Length: 118
Image 1 (tube, rainbow, N blue to C red):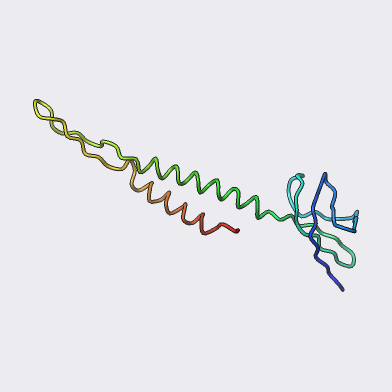
Image 2: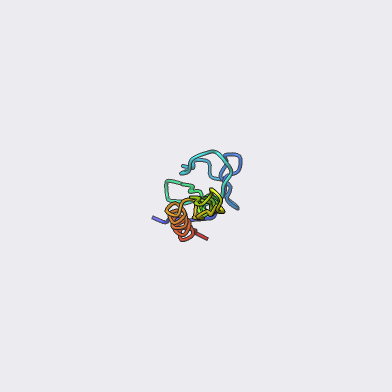
């Protein structure tokens, strides 16, 4: 039994492979959008698998940007308590808005960066 794997694409719901035009193809992906991927040919089957890596990387990149922004907000310095008054100048104690959340967002960002595929 011989099996071949060729680069392929889906355009308007039709499998496109240079020089070939198979009709009976099992498409292993969700959605109906155009895509690129691979066609696997066996003696009695043809299967198409979409390459979802670029979509996944784009999603990971967006999550990295979002966690970076959330970390920046959690790390904003704010006046947490004020002392003084009644004739003496008010003195504020400045702290990060949410130190624990900032640490968690930074950790998630690092984990996402480690997951990038390209």
